[in-house]
Image 1 (cartoon, one colour):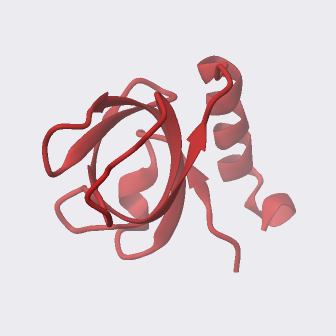
Image 2 (cartoon, helix red, strand yellow):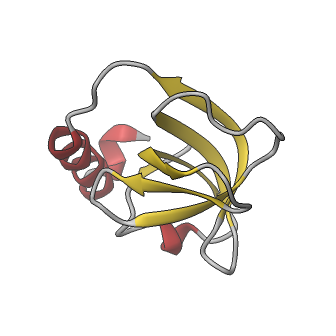
Length: 102
């Protein structure tokens, strides 16, 4: 089974599952750290390492917790600009057509 790409609108329905979510880092200082997903939602991220995120944008692979946070398993820094609207549309299409994207 593949790891679903999600946005702020739909990630909570994957509680207990591993997901991938892309966003802009808005708060590196606290535990949890926070990212703004491509659809504008603030998502709390529980980091798995002390140094946190090194890029302004990041893709987080993590497990959705009961409290709505995401426990980071790994993260990928994104150094190129992100077209949030296009990325969010892709996530929505992948959600609508799971049979194609699994």
